[in-house]
Image 1: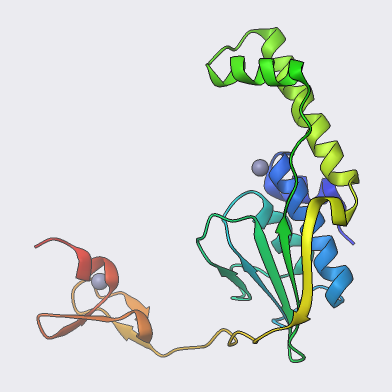
Image 2: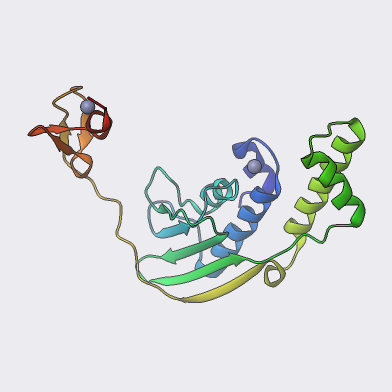
Length: 193
Ligand SMILES: [Zn+2]
Ligand SMILES: [Zn+2]
């Protein structure tokens, strides 16, 4: 099992979003079993924040394999579905950081652009405290969890490739466009004439 440090190593820095993603991913595996070697687990994520990196590393639902589906809703919601059973879990982040008055004041100064040592130090320790709380909270204090059977998304498909009549590069068939009666790629299609 990956540790939070493994995830930080992949992501590049430690942050609250990553901590949420890590907790989401651990919960998904607890609910649905082991990580995906191929596409036996599918993740549908509703944002493209730091959290999604943790989801990819821990659950094996990755952008490259096509078992990570991105719905651009700007919501902290993550749904995982096991193939072929259709067993699923929907995890919605529902947590507010219990900020102290002092933290609120310092955060306001930071937002306004203050970069004094004192402010930076306080912002750093606020972040560390937030990450610590997320990593140690109970699942039910962080998330609204719904476990039920769900529709299974299609597996990633392999398509024929076509050559663009303008740039000569190849694209997969469903991405081809027709321009002036010729088959072209999307960048060439969208190029202003
Ligand atoms: Zn991050
Ligand atoms: Zn082209």
